[in-house]
Image 1 (cartoon, rainbow, N blue to C red):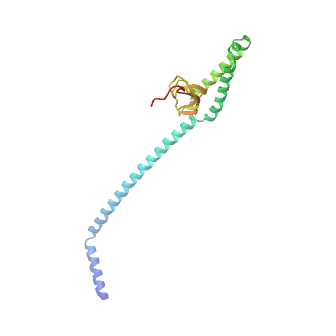
Image 2 (cartoon, rainbow, N blue to C red):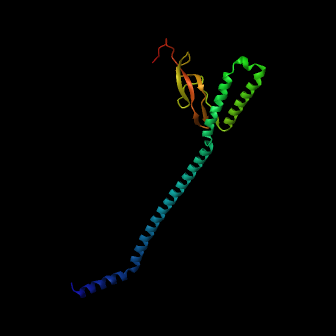
Image 3 (cartoon, rainbow, N blue to C red):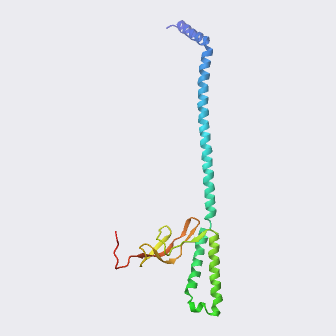
Length: 190
């Protein structure tokens, strides 16, 4: 092909393009509109996902904040439980005949009142004693320390060695308990 033929073909191509500039422009604008609409839809989806993510983050942070407030006293509460335990042990160690002695009666009453006030304060802060004796052993609340032969159904808590406590809906300290087992003369029914 000679240079003149190339020039001639290029000129024809230019003429054919210039004859239909509106068609070419319309095609470009239709493709451009479709592209813009697709991009717009993508951006809308991205915006919705971003809003949902922000809302989920806000909810999670609010939940974490409320839990932090509710359970912030956990360490202090555990320490105070040992004080409550020692007060109970002190009262249990005093024989009944000495409790009735007029010289000691006021001291015993003061210790009892202090113990009750301590438990009331703990309850005001969401700390509750776990009910154990007579209940079925719950490994989420109780820690079985010994098995005791008893007439009670097997697996029933018959003795509490140390009280358990919860703080709001979480276990603060499990109750240390003795659990009933079948008496040695009885056989287990399967």
